[in-house]
Amino acid sequence: MKALYLIRHAKSDWNNPSLSDFDRPLNKRGFRDAPFMAEKLGDLNFNPGLIVCSPAQRTTTTAEIISKNASILYDSSIYEASLSDLMHLINFLPNEHETIAIIGHNPSMTSLANYLTGDFIANMPTCSIVKVEFDIDNWNEVIQGMGTQKYFIYPKAFV
View 1 (spheres, rainbow, N blue to C red):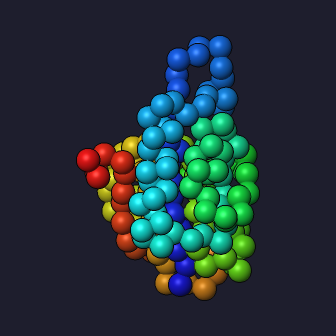
View 2: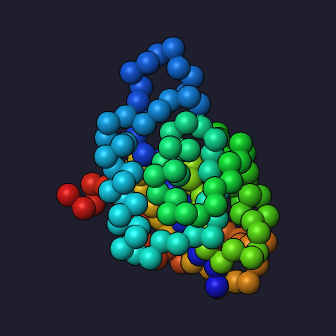
View 3: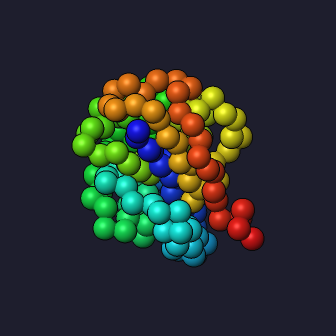
C-alpha cells in the first residue's frame, strides 16, 4: 500500500510586480493557512517519508512549514509541470517510502488528483491537500484512475 499527498502551496503574494512568478513569497493569508493546515495534517497522522517539492519560493516555504521532520527533495520538474511530467515523477519515486507528499502548483495539482482517482475536483484551492492511496507495492505501478481519494481538505472547509 502506498499513499500520496498532493499539496498545493499556500496563498502567495502578488503585490511586488518586479518579482518573477517563481520568486513570489507567501502572503499574510498563506502564513496563516500553512501552519493551520499543518496542524490539521498532524491530526490526520501526516508522516510522509519524503516530501518532493517545486523549488519556487511559495512551495518551499509551504514545505518548510508543514514538513514535520520529513526529508524535502526539491524537483524543478514540478514547477509548471504537465500531467505527464508529474506521472513520470510519481513512477520514479523511491519505493522505500510508503508515504510521500508532492507540493506543487495549479492547475497541475488539480489535474493530477482527478487523473489518479477518477474523481472530479473543480479546483484545489491554495493550501489544499488531497490524500490518495494505492493498493500497490511500487510507485512505477501507478496509472490513471487506480488511486482512492481518502480526503480533500483546505482551509476554508474548516471555517
